[in-house]
Length: 412
Image (tube, rainbow, N blue to C red; front, side, top):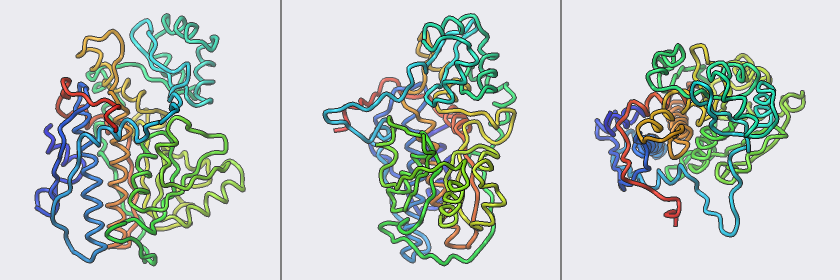
């Protein structure tokens, strides 16, 4: 797959081909990877840029825009590391002390224990002391597949390392490959009373309800906030993301509530009623526990634009499985490819959380295009994305340039 194919993958091909919007890529530095991570992310950013150009043109009263949007590949790559350069302090580690890759008797498995509940679930299944040495001893005598299943059934998160070939023959890998990159459906059409946005700040006056956590969803809503949207992020009262919150809450209003209580659900429903765009990271049926069933959402706010994210997609045997970027990389063959092609002795993931960032940009572009459609037709819409399906698109692309490298120190 060429870079042009990446561009078309993210839905900006028609504009390029028709001459309405030309994409110009500047900067050719690339992150070192067995996959073209930088080219992939640049194409996703081009999707955001062309969607924004379309919306700006629409708000300016122009039927179709023309010209060029420039995407800097170096800056896009750096944005997948961090937008923050601490001066006199250090960012907290993003990983729990037990998280990481462990050998099993038949390969490798990754434990994701950053959340308290996921850490407790993994330890409960393993039945050992909360130390890396104790966990390693148990895992070394265990089957990766069996433990992966047991940990997920116990409420935890783990990813057994598979090759790309093993994933392509896996029932869920096959199901994910059949899913579209973005699954979209139109919903109810209602008159749009709120006029918002200017060509300079195209999402000004647009309210976004953000129910997402690390990392793809927050990247999406941060992008919308940078374009002028009023983003309200809602977290549980006991939830914190100290390693990324400084980076991903920029431009947002953040509130905490307990949506397991009647008062919390009432507050959440009031926020939902006032939103124009709803972005969330809940899997199939999970919103029901917060009082936001599909029927209730339609009753509260018919015609809203909804963009959702799931780790493993919306079909197949793993559609209810929890996951994160690093775990999905283990499942689908990315970490195994890095290990094999670079001759390493352990799983070798991408140099950044590229599935998160690229999916986040894809979600942002989808939300912008859906808002244009809403302004044009009055139709609401629902859109679904997943980290696993983003991985399919990345792995279908060209190999990365291992000779090129971007260092975080180049931020300045």
